Amino acid sequence: MIFDITQSYNKQNRQRLSDRYYPVDLLKTIIYNNKYDPEHIKLEIKSKLHDKNVGKSTVFRMVDNDFKSCLLYEGNLQFNKALYNWSSYKRLVSKGLWSWAYVTLYYAQFYAVTGLLNIQGNVFTRPVLREKEHQFHIYPENFEDGVFILESRRLNKPHEDVWRQYYNVYRRARYKLQDYNELYQYDEENQFKAIHDRNFTNYDISYKFLEYEYSREELKAFQESMSRNIFLVKDRNRFLNIEYIASLRIKLLYEQLDEILTNNEFKEVKTNFNNKRKEMLELTIDDTPVRSIFQDWILE
Image 1 (cartoon, rainbow, N blue to C red):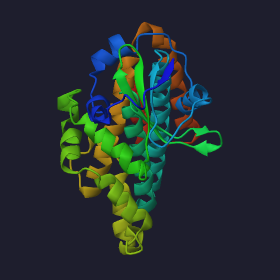
Image 2 (cartoon, rainbow, N blue to C red):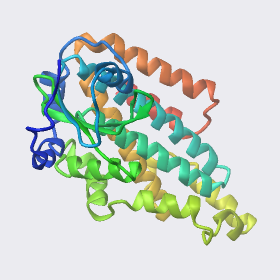
Image 3 (cartoon, helix red, strand yellow):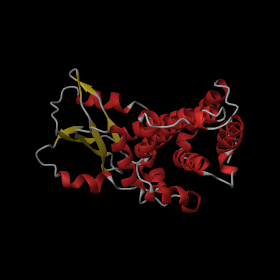
Image 4 (cartoon, rainbow, N blue to C red):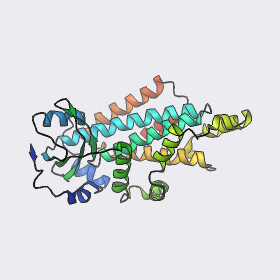
């Protein structure tokens, strides 16, 4: 069921609702405990709103427990994209191609951040309705009962919007605090650094390619340094620290998804996802530490 609540909705409630953090135990036992019927979020929203009048500030209330399946499904798909880009980053950087490798690592993080938001009920999506693209921010009003707010919003900086929402939600996170303390602390002190560095590396003409600045010997040493398993590296320089923080973010998404899918009802879903991920790493001839790291994760 979906209702137009544009006139009655108080947008001052947005931050209180959209910025709420749900502990993984709650996600696993209460929120994601119904049937799993996957569908893409954009297609689901397009189907529900195909006959609705949508303006620039229209707000809907959607009551649909099955929508949680879309969130869990896309959270897993976002991890797949993060894993692929992380693997691609590692192959690029091991050849000394740091500049494009860093951009690739950024996207691995961006997909991880998107997935981390998805499992918290937060979505930014752009369905095409009546031949016009509309921007929506979706967030829970009552996550347990499957009640969501669909707010049509003008979002001019899609990457920054996603990161800002991630920081707002995950600043309350205490999931495995000892394991992820460095990531939580980094995010508190370096908000938007990833996107700013990506923009400088990718777009700014004044950026100097590290590949052209290093000598052959320096570049070879750099390649060897960056080819290691980042979770086993103790002597992290600034390049390795960037990789470590990014890798922690990807692992954070995987571990939360893995824990949610420990529910017996999701056992087959979890196995299928992991098998396809292993196959992807093998088919893309992943000879970096990413493959062995992922295999260690799924065997834990």
